Length: 138
Ligand SMILES: [Cu+2]
Image (cartoon, rainbow, N blue to C red; front, side, top):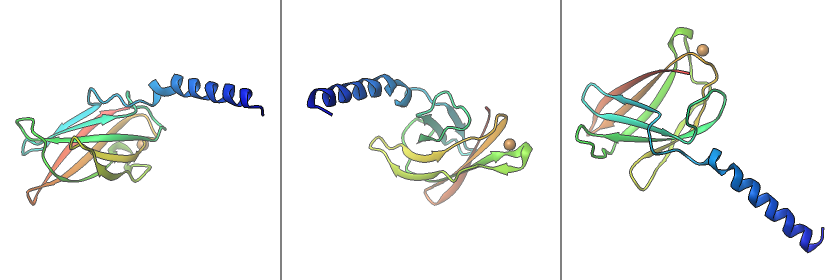
């Protein structure tokens, strides 16, 4: 490959990537799911796949807020599944870090069936356990 055709190839590759970027870019402006614990802690889930669809692996940013809207440091554990089908998640999503703004990064999320899903978000805040249950349909 000559230098100029290599350059053309790179330019095409860059423009293809640029064209794809709206699909890859996270829409982190509006939560796709929200929940509240009995104690009043709010859970907001922002997704790089929005709207949520089945069979796509994706990443969430999870925001934990107190009743006044201030960020709360929490230990969190997410599980879920389809209660009507008596099965859990097809993947084992993991909290892999915390972002600079305080959101928690959850990677490896995927839903594999349309229907009624339920998420359980267990929080430990100030040594006290709380759970937010989020029901939604895909
Ligand atoms: Cu199912």
